[in-house]
Image 1 (cartoon, rainbow, N blue to C red):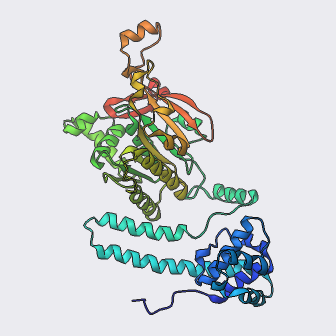
Image 2 (image 1 turned 45 degrees about the horizontal axis):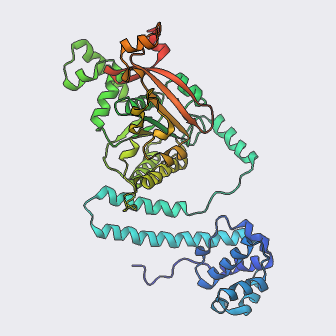
Image 3 (image 1 turned 180 degrees about the vertical axis):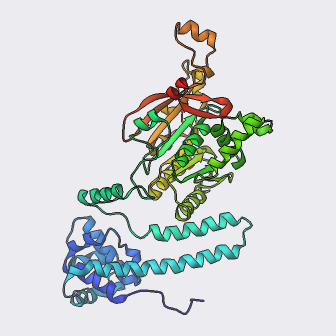
Length: 454
């Protein structure tokens, strides 16, 4: 369809960039953060720009003589038109002062060419006719996102500019890009985290099976949504119906097993109806697709934010995420490293806290006190490194009975259903431990002080 059309480019802008560099080599610092050699349409101009990059990386001057020498060493001087062309380029521009303007034109036409190439790749995905429509759409969205993310890296910002943005956002009130944290609904937890879950943070909630990591994550999700925050949940283990029953039990105070079996009395049914009315109004969205890849999840999260807004993202749980299929050797540790880095990237790109549940290794069972350590994270290296916050759930009543407890701790109450939340890593603040009460029949965590008072 487009085979006979010349792709977008601007030869005058390309020549002007190179002419400006030959007049003032230091001007390269104004454009190198976003202008890459592949942005040039003409190969000869690409080679010249690469030569300038090589020179400045060695802290050498940029002019006709040094660029010609660099190209000669690479065997490329004749390919760009020889020393004669290098002598012509400075005459094209009266001053290098406008190099940024020329570079932006070159970069913009490059993006347009990438868009054309990407559209062809998306067409190929369509012609493949894969039966997995969701996977095909995710691939297409990822290709488009790659074009956007290639628009150039961030550059330095003055502290004054950063503070201006902070002042503007805090005075206008919270929105998708707000710096305001998201409250978890657990007072002591929020206090340690500096007021709540911070935007762009990756938060790990880790525990051995059946200790409540999913329940804690879903409780935080519901608490945040009840406060008006838009919350997304990726549930790779439980169905959306199972999550709905859990949230309904927590909100209504009706035993979750009775709800599942539909054996509730009239009074309980009234509570259920009231809770359905409350929960139906909150902005909480669930995706229960199993065996998702991190690419699919990133695309879906980005789409959710664009269409409905997103303030908090929950992933349950991390070890069930598939990588991108690049690790055929079976190196799960390396694959988990890619996944944890991608989750942190999602948190930063979307400017939302991401809570990811994670399994702990069996090493805990071999220690006398059974208290989790950072080294207990399964495939731990990258998870621990990429996470801003790592928290563990520890319950003494799972490892010691009441009689043994009284012998070892005379006079101290048995910690039945008391969950200790251990914040073992906090990149931007203090660590510490808090205690929550876990109502198992309601799969609900509560602030311990609130439970004791009520």
